[in-house]
Image 1 (tube, one colour):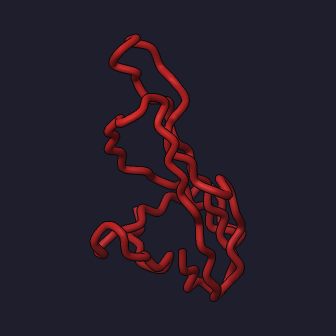
Image 2: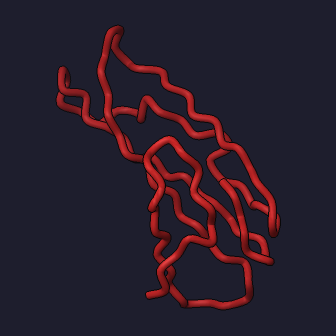
Length: 100
């Protein structure tokens, strides 16, 4: 993740449990983003790692992960939606945003 702001941001990856179609119960998400939460300094980069460990051999999963970004610029109660104009698999700069 690239933070192009002149202040730090906090990134939080929250992955929800998934439905085990064999048992019809919610189980731990087979994807894991490490670290799950990280502060990224102003004008710097940070690389997150994604691990995949299926709960059944030969399982197939598809998931779009989303992260929550907190702007650490002193403004509170303002919402910003980040626009992803880059294809999946490419990095997105934190300065690519749409003010709401």
